[in-house]
Length: 192
Image 1 (cartoon, rainbow, N blue to C red):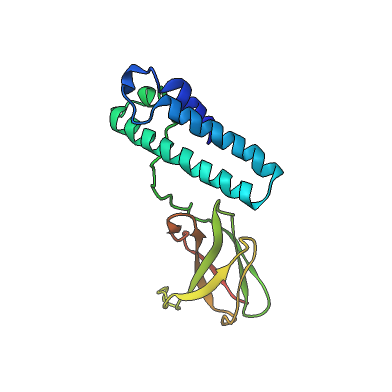
Image 2 (image 1 turned 90 degrees about the vertical axis):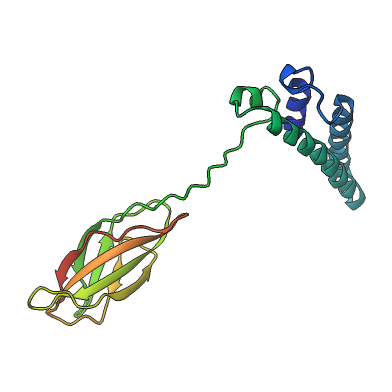
């Protein structure tokens, strides 16, 4: 905050794009100096000095907020003009990002009636959800069943499968700002 206040002091005042700021330069300088001194005092002092530092910080923040609103109303969406004020641009992008779709690397046989699904790791995934369906002799899929949530992409055991049954599996990653990825392409494997 001290850096921002110093930058605003050196760039905003006498800037033709921002005539007549709502806070006088001398007032901002006094608040910055008081805050800087209170930081040093709080390092040597106790709770009283820390409370004083917090009060001085709030006073400086209040002045900077007034100036930031003033700059925001006058920079005309021009980044160079905004930066000439001493304030920095802040991203307002809140777009969510979808997790990458997982790829099933392989399915291994575990114990009897168990298959182990393995996928390539997905960046920002907290865990992986598996679903599976029994493939009927005619090739139609039975209803999807949940294979649970797994924290390791390298080993997702799915048990209680019918030995000799052919199953189709899909996996999706969970996490990130969008919540979850698309389901992976389906992969089939026979349970032993």
